[in-house]
Image (cartoon, rainbow, N blue to C red; front, side, top):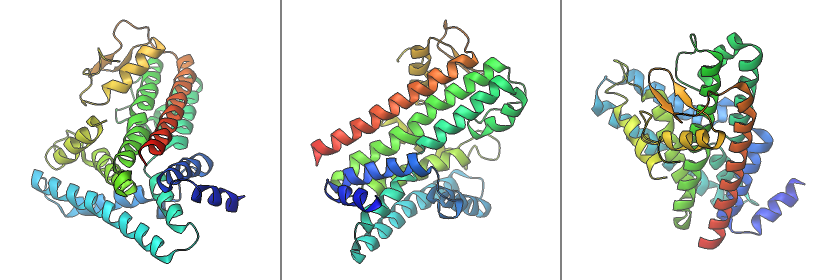
Length: 294
């Protein structure tokens, strides 16, 4: 079966084959072990650089440049080495694996579904897992607020974990640098998730990481999109709130969908279906665009 899949992949344009294989790997296998996961390795490099850096914007810029450039260059060298070996489909498989590491369809849907189930059945247990999805303190969240957090995370991560990596893959594929561009975006996004906070310790060191992530996602439901601190996350949240007819709220920070009803746990499954549909359309659209431009 694997032989037939690889044979089919090699019969279509290489960037399209890489995209389809990457999505297939994600849906079938989920996330690879941490020891060989490129994003985990990015996180370790960030941690190592942070431990040696001072709390200044200059250090933050340096860390960002090192991580983004090294991620793209190492990815390029790995793909080049695989192509040089000229083993049957090895370059395509390595490229697909690297592209897969920048997207997270299965893990996003499964994690959100499990936490959503716990919000309904065991709120205290759900609060222990919510930090895997959102950065807010879950201790004082009500069931309604926890439900909102799950749906907000789904809509925001649709951009971070699917749309933006594929956007940069599409944008740079005609140059033969699609995977490298997706890795560079993922490095930017990982920097923001680890350093891009407005705490006393990170407000300067993480400044470049947060701004670069905003810019990278900006390149990619209108009334409430400016309600959130991020210039980008409000767009998918506003779209989700409008589609579901609900209001999404981070207490004391923002409200998206003012005038909508409060979300209930019954809204989580429709939100998951909405996201799955959006992901399917995104992947299909990306595949069609690749066939047109290549």
